[in-house]
Structures are given as structure tokens and as C-alpha cells.
Image (cartoon, rainbow, N blue to C red; front, side):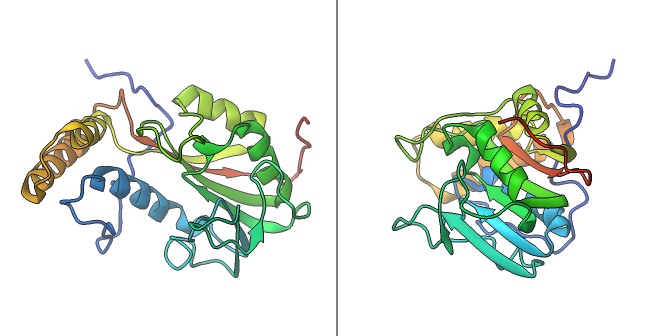
Length: 237
């Protein structure tokens, strides 16, 4: 009997990719499985990036010239630290910019570090123009990081709840790998041998299993595209 999908709305990001797509990390890197899922999912979303774009939690703007290159104007928002180069200094929960100022909002690997994620999503909704899109990625699994600002991980139902409660309409959802990518990444982070060929073999084996066996009980994370409705229904405060 066919399995009932654990995440029925989600798509696998390695399907239907352009032939020239290539991960920025080598296959021998211990974080390759996570990075190829993040970057392939963003590749699928790049057609939604248009007009004036706000990158919430931009850090050092790693995707400004790649997946977000289709923008007319790119604006990075973040705290000012030694690991960020923001154009605007501010918080995801209190964006110091006007209502309906942007055609697109993007935010990659930030929401897990926000103490009030629903407030952050409502702020992103507020600064978007009606009909504009939000592109957001966040992990489901990753070890503790950015201490002490590592607050949340988002299961499928919780993520959909946040999207709905913030006023957005879901357009696309990618589960960043299935169960075997998850298992392979966990093995990479606990196995004690730092040997590039071993890392390469682990990554290749579990990536093949992930694509071909399609067991989707677990995932490394999520990337989604959501739309602010044209009628611009107000969100709750």
C-alpha cells in the first residue's frame, strides 16, 4: 500500500531543478546535505523575487547576487554586528520601515532566532505591498547555534499555523529533504572522523536514498513562498 505523506503540501527541492544548478559547498563538506536543500529550494523560489526587496536578517547578504538577483532594489535589514552588513539597522519584530513599502520580503534561516515569530511574520506582512510575496526558510533540525538566541524549530503544522495567523496565503512549500537527508546530516554531525572521502561517501549515499526512497517522516527544514492577499486584510495585533 502507498504511504500517506507526512507533509502533503511539501515538495522535494531537488526535483525539476535546472541542469546547471550546483551547490556552493563541495559534496565532501559535513553540512552539504543541509546546504544543497536550502539552496535548491531557494532556486525554485527565485522567480518570485521582484521589485523592491527587503531581506530580513540579511547577515552578510549571501544570496543578494544569486537567488535574489532578480530584484529591482535590494535592502538588507539586521542588527549591526561583526557578522552583518545591513542597509537598515533593525529587528524582525519591529521593522523601522513604512507599510506596503516592498514588493518582496525574503528571510533565510532567521525565524528560529526570533523570540516572537508570529510578530515577526506580521511585520513582514505589514511592509509588503498587496499581492507581494514572502520567501522564508527555517530549519526543522539543526544543533544549537547562535547562542543564546536559538529559540525555535518549526514542525509542519506549526509552520502552517504561523503562515495563516499572520495573514499570508501559502503559495509553495518545500520540505528540505526527506528522512534520509535528515539521517545523513545527523550522522555527519556526530561521527568523529574528519576525513573528506568519508564525508563524500555519506553525503552521496544518503542523498541518493533521499531522492529515490522518498520516506518523508523527517526533514531538515522548510522553505516557503507566501502571498499577501490583494485585498490586504488586516492582521491581529
